[in-house]
Image (tube, rainbow, N blue to C red; front, top):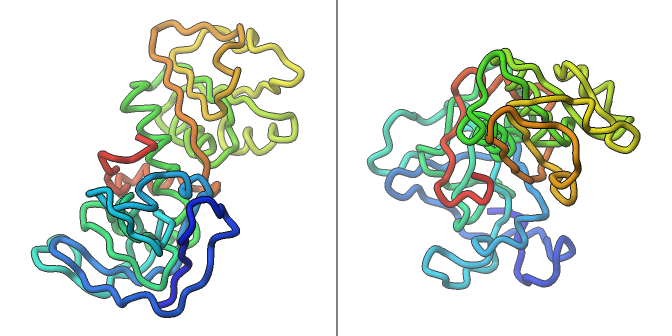
Length: 264
């Protein structure tokens, strides 16, 4: 099996290499094998312990990075229910197993969801990690509901762009922030107001119910928007930015997050 692998923790992106002889995969209990049509990868994965060791802490190099994927089911493991060979699916792989930058990937059934026919594989592979980060930040932690106001820092980034769409969909008032060049894209995604943090004061946002921060740094320490309720949630991440990603999550076909996820 062909795959992109990493062997040296200190090599960074330069350490990624194409390997032609990775062992063929076979589905374990409750696993499925997915033929990968599109995959997502963030350089930050190369700093995660799970990229280099298994759950028992043993070295597992050469390892295959990447956790987001979209593809078709080609093999079912013993005990697998809810899926069959052939359907299109999207989801994410376990953090301590070989990932998605390969021809095939082994995935737990619970971490996959059906892929709607009108969504292509490239779009779907951009959603799982970033989408779940946005969903968990807004609703599991921020408890955002209809009629509330949310301030989203980094509104056009990989996570922020999905957060904007989800917040808009549930009927919240959305204020986005970013650089001036991001204003038009943020408005197209559905923000009700946009603030350029380089030239506009955060005070203009007024009172908000939830602050969702995917920038980090000194953003949280800046004076400005006041929360009506103490539900500030900071969530920083990076990854591929989807254009219509919210559609997949709104259809309730999102994959389940791993309890060990660094994003949740």
